Image 1: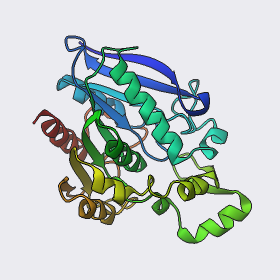
Image 2 (image 1 turned 180 degrees about the vertical axis):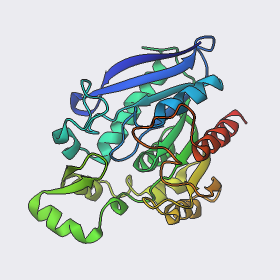
Image 3 (image 1 turned 30 degrees about the horizontal axis):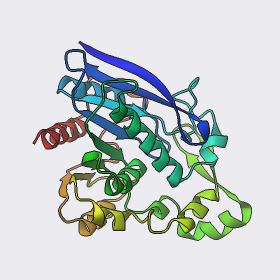
Image 4 (image 1 turned 90 degrees about the vertical axis):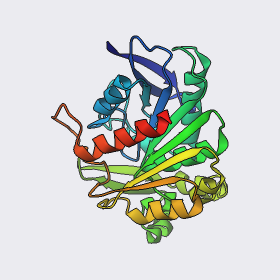
Length: 276
């Protein structure tokens, strides 16, 4: 029987992180896959629960979580109800959160301890996952889906001067029609940690096996990002998904009960990669 256990952990600055772990009840010690969502993402977005169920049915424990400053709250886990937290987010905060999650998975404090983990990162979460994989030997294999190759690619470079003067910038969320605020602390974070937050440089340091997947119809993070990452780490297994968009066919909300074709292919290739 497929089950889902829910947990709450304190993340960066004490903000709560909701976690769920989907698994086959007969395989409580199955290998652990950790999923890191992207910018303006959350653990229960669209097709994420279907993906978790698919991995569980194929012999994995699938852990997904909300980054502490992603803008959701424990009371509203699928809504951007805390834009103050969102505005305070930085890449260093997300790296701290991911470290806490890996600690949780490997410690046995809430679930059966994992002897290392597999990591999947989507979009901005892909960039975070690449850095963390280069730094943490507990990560045994890495999979990135539609990953960015640089954090400054998330906004127009010319916006930074005005952003610093005003101390804040607003990113339009076309799905919710919200103006998502980001304080200039995120720029300060990049300036303070230029070596750690250089994604291609960290990609070059990844020694674990890495499956790098990107759709050739991605209008959000163009295929050039994946090509830059593969150039930095040619040992990565690079697969271009024909017709794949930024979410591999996923939508939010998602009314179906089966995975879109592109996402199913992603899952099958990922599972095969993790098994061998």
